[in-house]
Length: 362
Length: 81
Image (tube, rainbow over all chains, first blue to last red; front, side, top):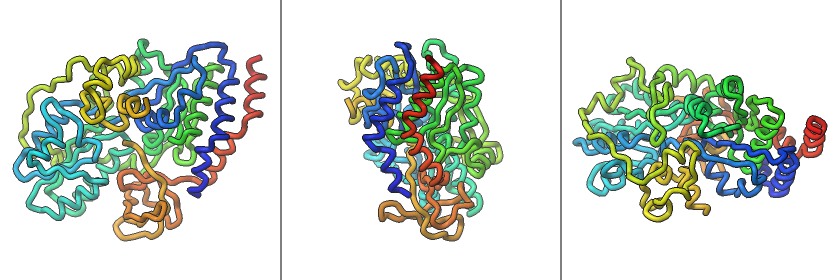
């Protein structure tokens, strides 16, 4: 089975797809497509997808890296929690280097805070089980792909009566952000390359409102180069025919209605709230917060931490980059003071950020 | 961050856990989000959890679509010329 996956990288088929796209009757029309998933941004740069497309087709990156869109005040709160007596801070690796207003978890660790990188929430739960006298706080960030794994860890914590485990929640949901960007005339998105694994959880029908209410073309695609090329082909075909809809190129994983067990777990533990997207601002209904029946696991209720208001770094244009309005090369900090080793802005901090992708493959 | 990898389930364990393998590397994976997965299923694994099955028929059908070059082109040209 896995041998088939090699075929999703076949150079010969990539050229055929490129030809298929080039022969579409674009007639010089300028078409802007946005990928909203950081893993797509990386794949597009890694495989040189832009170079394969007609000049009039523009691919822009959206706010699809959960680390990048996590507000600075969240990092500041995480740092304040990590500094509490006895706390073990458990996190996915991507968060460690992210700068807050004054420090980062990496720096905090070097100053004596106990920050542990885990692969899974269940590893964080194991830390809690093995260290019953110490509070374990997990940094719960991520989109619909990741949020069910946090929900699952809370269900397990309750089942196993683990009381020293809590979470700092800043989950975000993709469709409300895609709605906000589609409604912004300054961006002019005509088609979305919809996220792959978010869609595995929520199902492709979750995007139906985009063609219906905004006339925006949608295609769910996988992360392999041929997946993305085929997705671009499907989107351009929708735009040319003026028949916006949701095409599902990633049918080997994504179903119309998503993963019912994961969705049930999300619903049981979380409820929607307004979400603050770093660089973009508040987007109504785009966040997840713990339901009242789960608030005992909210780290901010267990520890009294207060942070001064967060300060965004001056000169950074990440807000415009996250909305696809400007490219990283338009930022005077890019590649000079802002690099993957010393990230200044949101889009450089994670390997999947737009600036990090541009920097790596420039 | 939403990267997930395909793995093959080798063995089911208690408490919704299983052992899954890719490229000769095995690790314990949770099936809490995919409780009906079985041994020999290919699943997409994200942060230690199987989040969805990988459907072989659909995987092959998609590859066929990449190669459906001439048909779709003719269709487009008839539509627009």
